[in-house]
Length: 104
Image (cartoon, rainbow, N blue to C red; front, side, top):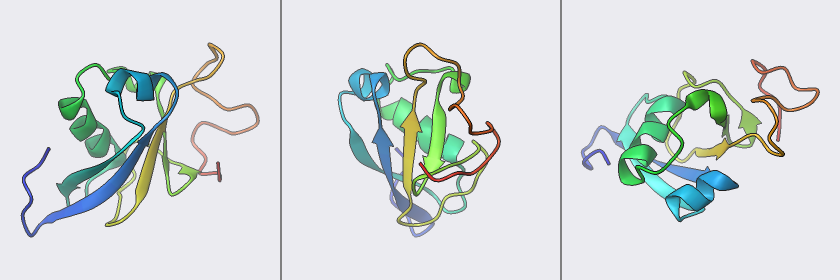
């Protein structure tokens, strides 16, 4: 994790399905620098839990219950969720374009 300095913020990260199993936790507070991206939040989680999926194409991120892109910027207090494909499916949700921000 990033050291706690004046330029960090707390993000609540949630892990679902096999990601939860890989990390051994379903949620965790992650401290990242201000203006960090979703990808930086996941990288911080991977440093704390090296068994987490390393292929970003196999994980779908969401910010505050809306699907997001990996380069979306997070804010203090945001909830960022990481969801793997279910039922062996592709990295998409039926009826939801991969690049859209839709409510979960």
